[in-house]
Image (cartoon, rainbow, N blue to C red; front, side, top):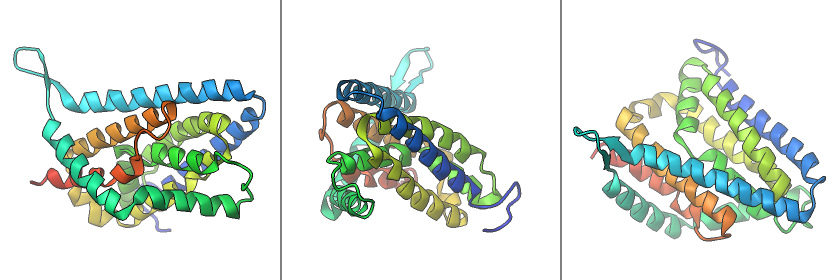
Length: 245
């Protein structure tokens, strides 16, 4: 670790991961107190909440006030181009399959072979807490100055989300801390290289596409396996690239 302007560089990701683990442990204890029927209802409620979080972020990115005060929609071509290209790359690379194989590996290594929901819980929670502009902006701040405040706030939100998800879906959600640590830690280390790419327009594009991906996660929680959300993750990269076209 290095000393930054406001603190220890990398501390933000450590706090974020620790809060996810804490939320998951609380959710594990709480989940044991619920009947399967209550757990299913809680999962649907979580899905509905995640769905509207994604929807509100997407609408905030697409809608603006015109000169006459009327709402104007934009970003349609960005969405179509990003998701078409991103889904194509994701399918060719099979990111969804790789996520599931990682989940299976973790399931075997953690003695969770008897938990049939482990892999789905891990993949769903990981996609929910990894996607979004907050993770990238916070990691860049952490990497450049040691300012961990954004990632600490994200960690508090993640802890609540993972707590509820773990209570309804099982302990596989706790292990979403692993991809969060790797993803945000990598961005923190590469912050000086990534920062010039994160212009205001690039961040707006990333936030819009990321919010739609979160919406897809919410849909999957209510209607299982509707989208292969992991295979659409490259759409975020194309959204950033399109900011410079």
